[in-house]
Amino acid sequence: MHKRQKRAIDVVLETTDLLLECPEERAFSKAELWQQIDARTFRGSLADLRTFKWLEERAGTKGDIKDQKGAEMTMMNMVGSYPASTLLGIKK
Image 1: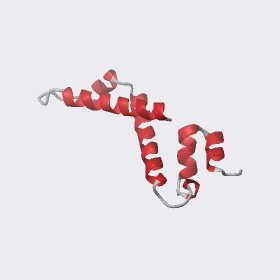
Image 2: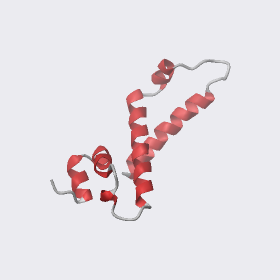
Image 3: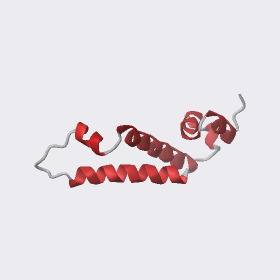
């Protein structure tokens, strides 16, 4: 998971750098952005970062993470349906 998190951060930072390096007097369209980076990769990175944020926030809560609202869906998005249910201890 740490490699995935690092990659997501790298993609978002690279994209941010592209936007910040664009001269202010020049408009920068989404089409130009997608020529520089892959839209699917960028959106996937954002989803991964939101998932990591969710997991980080829930780790500090009392109780078991499996009892938190949305835990199963988040874990399924993160690691797939079989490991998610196994990791969360959910019996189907």
